Amino acid sequence: MSSPEGRPTECVRLNLQITEANGVEQILGKNNRDAVQELGAEAQLVVDALVALGIDFHPHALGMKKLHLSERVQ
Image (tube, rainbow, N blue to C red; front, top):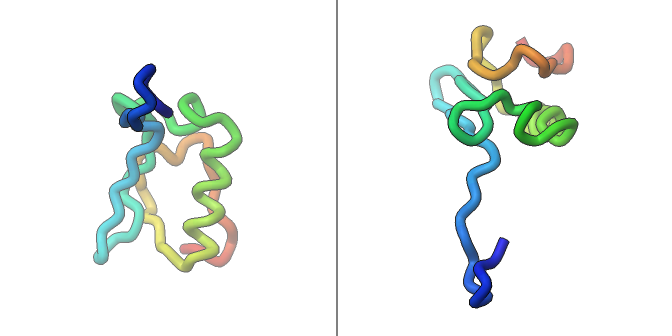
Protein backbone atom coordinates (compact mmCIF):
# COMPACT_ATOMS: atom_id res chain seq x y z
CA MET A 1 0.00 0.00 0.00
CA SER A 2 1.07 3.56 -0.54
CA SER A 3 0.12 6.89 0.94
CA PRO A 4 -1.31 9.59 -1.34
CA GLU A 5 2.24 10.93 -1.56
CA GLY A 6 3.48 7.58 -2.87
CA ARG A 7 5.29 6.56 0.31
CA PRO A 8 4.83 2.98 1.55
CA THR A 9 2.43 2.63 4.46
CA GLU A 10 2.44 -0.13 7.02
CA CYS A 11 -0.47 -2.53 6.97
CA VAL A 12 -0.61 -5.48 9.34
CA ARG A 13 -2.64 -8.28 7.81
CA LEU A 14 -1.31 -11.26 9.73
CA ASN A 15 0.58 -11.73 12.97
CA LEU A 16 2.68 -14.87 13.32
CA GLN A 17 4.45 -15.82 16.50
CA ILE A 18 7.07 -18.46 15.76
CA THR A 19 9.48 -19.75 18.38
CA GLU A 20 12.38 -22.14 18.06
CA ALA A 21 10.97 -24.36 20.81
CA ASN A 22 7.34 -24.60 19.65
CA GLY A 23 7.18 -23.43 16.04
CA VAL A 24 4.09 -21.37 15.20
CA GLU A 25 2.37 -20.42 18.44
CA GLN A 26 -0.14 -18.02 16.93
CA ILE A 27 -1.48 -16.98 13.55
CA LEU A 28 -3.91 -14.10 13.89
CA GLY A 29 -5.07 -11.14 11.85
CA LYS A 30 -4.90 -7.47 12.70
CA ASN A 31 -5.98 -6.71 16.30
CA ASN A 32 -5.96 -10.46 17.06
CA ARG A 33 -8.81 -11.13 14.65
CA ASP A 34 -9.25 -14.57 13.19
CA ALA A 35 -6.74 -15.10 10.33
CA VAL A 36 -9.44 -16.47 8.02
CA GLN A 37 -11.63 -13.44 8.74
CA GLU A 38 -8.67 -11.19 7.92
CA LEU A 39 -7.28 -12.93 4.82
CA GLY A 40 -9.93 -15.36 3.67
CA ALA A 41 -8.60 -18.41 1.82
CA GLU A 42 -5.12 -16.90 1.69
CA ALA A 43 -4.72 -17.66 5.42
CA GLN A 44 -4.71 -21.37 4.59
CA LEU A 45 -2.13 -20.72 1.85
CA VAL A 46 0.15 -19.15 4.48
CA VAL A 47 -0.23 -22.22 6.71
CA ASP A 48 0.46 -24.52 3.76
CA ALA A 49 3.57 -22.55 2.83
CA LEU A 50 4.90 -22.71 6.40
CA VAL A 51 4.27 -26.46 6.48
CA ALA A 52 6.10 -26.84 3.15
CA LEU A 53 9.06 -25.00 4.69
CA GLY A 54 9.14 -27.54 7.52
CA ILE A 55 7.99 -25.12 10.21
CA ASP A 56 6.23 -26.87 13.09
CA PHE A 57 2.99 -25.72 14.69
CA HIS A 58 2.27 -25.84 18.40
CA PRO A 59 -0.63 -28.26 19.01
CA HIS A 60 -2.66 -25.45 20.58
CA ALA A 61 -1.55 -22.56 18.35
CA LEU A 62 -3.89 -19.58 18.61
CA GLY A 63 -5.86 -18.82 15.46
CA MET A 64 -5.97 -22.33 14.00
CA LYS A 65 -9.72 -22.98 14.52
CA LYS A 66 -10.66 -22.58 10.85
CA LEU A 67 -7.28 -23.72 9.47
CA HIS A 68 -5.79 -27.18 9.12
CA LEU A 69 -2.34 -28.73 8.89
CA SER A 70 -1.20 -31.36 6.47
CA GLU A 71 -0.68 -34.85 7.88
CA ARG A 72 3.09 -34.55 7.94
CA VAL A 73 3.06 -31.87 10.68
CA GLN A 74 2.42 -33.15 14.21
